[in-house]
Every structure is written in structure tokens, then in C-alpha cells.
Length: 189
Image (cartoon, rainbow, N blue to C red; front, side, top):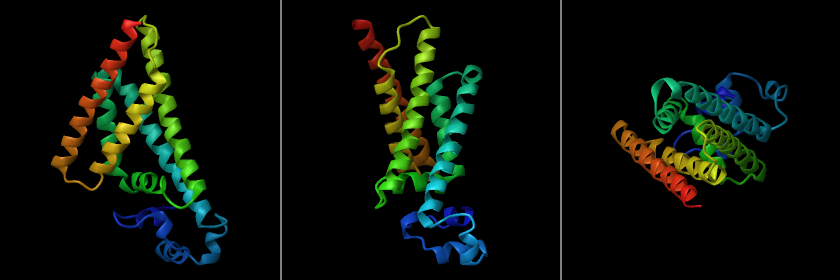
């Protein structure tokens, strides 16, 4: 799995990798590959699951840090950026294969995005209830927030540090405006 991830670059997606390249990089024979996976597609699906799980675990830890460090948006985006810089090929896999040729990959990545959205939705609804407010349209807002964050990640992935910081700050502002609009809309009803 690490060998396949290590070969993903700015201009190379998982669908362009061959079994021969992956096994050569891993230092194993092709037959050894088949002890773990039926084919390259199975390897890719395992990588998608690993990438999504890794990011969700990091974001869960971020939510734990929020009570100590303040802003949920700031902490979440900063944590997302840390993941992006530490595991660029995990994110590259999620990003590129969501529009790739494999319907199975696209569905697996869509499922991972839904996990992000659902966890954020649950978190926001819980916060609103704890604060004695009726939850606003948290499902729609969480979907928009995840979409904005991943779009920012796609721009920041291969950018320099100054650009990454700029993208992150701009996304924080966009998320705040989105959230304020949702709260204001709820108050009018």
C-alpha cells in the first residue's frame, strides 16, 4: 500500500499505476501481491478507505482540541492542512480518483465524503442542542463546508507555503460566512 501511495504524484493518478510498478517499488514478486489483494482495484479501494479513515481520525482529534483552543473552523482547517501536508498522496488519491474511470472508486470516495459530512453534521447538531438552540440546516451546511474544504485542499496541495496559508485563511472566512448565513436564516423562521 505504501509503495502505491508513494508513486502518486501531481501528474500521476492511481489508475495510471501498474501492478509491476507497485510490486517493484515494494520489492516483492507479483505473486506476493496476490496474497493480499485480488487485483489493483482492490488495492486502490483499500487505499481509499485508509485515506478516508486517517483523515476522519485526525479531524475527530481536532474536534477534541476545539474546546481547548477555541474556534472550530480555525482548528478544523488548520488540522486539515496539517493532514494535507503530512499525507499529500492520501489526499491526492481521494481527489483524483473521485472523477476517475472506476465507478467502484468513485462510489468508495463518495462514501468517504459522506462520512466526513455526516460526522460534521452530527457535531454541529450536537453543539446547537448543547447551546439551547434548535439545529439549523446542519446537513446542508456540513455538505457545503466539506465541499469548500476539499476544494481548498485541491488548490493548496501542490502550492507553496504562502499560497497554502492564503487558501486556508480564505476558506476559514468562507466557512464563517456560510455558518453565519445559516444561523441568520434559522433565526428568521
